[in-house]
Amino acid sequence: SNLVSMEAVKGMEYCTFDQRNADLQAQHCTVLPFTRNAIGSMDFTPIVFNPRIRGVRLKTTLAFELALSVVFESGIQHFGLVPEEYELMPAYVVEFLQTVPTAWDTTRFVDGYPGQYVVIARKSGETWTIAGINGTDDKKNLSVDLSFIPANAKGTLITDGTGRTFTQTMLEKSALQKATIEMQPRGGFVIVVKP
Image (cartoon, rainbow, N blue to C red; front, side, top):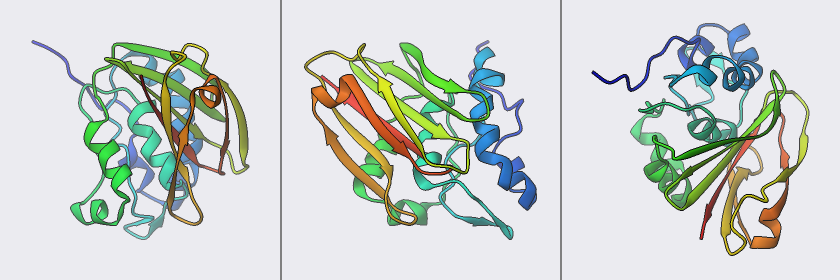
């Protein structure tokens, strides 16, 4: 038999039980890559774009939620989305969700500190996907060393836009080697790099 994933974590459902749990979600999620997810696949049920669930107001941004699909490793991902939410997302976000791998060839810890922020890079085939989340209530400016990315690569950055929106930026190879990224409070980002 093969083990694909297991919950064994205070996952997304936990964050919707009451407002206190929702208030702690961003910080909680920055601890898990260093603890529970470091020892095996974890079914967190990432990506919830609806800001209110059963009267609880979620405090994380859309890019934070999107980044969880890469930051958290699981042999199968159960996104916490309903079909109507896909219709509201930009085409590039829907494409990302359709193509994000669940099996990775290589994983690299890039930067982070438990309870504050984390940046993880994962490779599948020739594509690198780098994602980060901010667990604090303050903006976080990161200078991310991506020197392991091939010199001829081009990337796409998805991060938070104004309000509850996304923004997409194309990154040339010079911007990829030492990427400077501003994460919103409880925000995140995803970079997809292809040769």
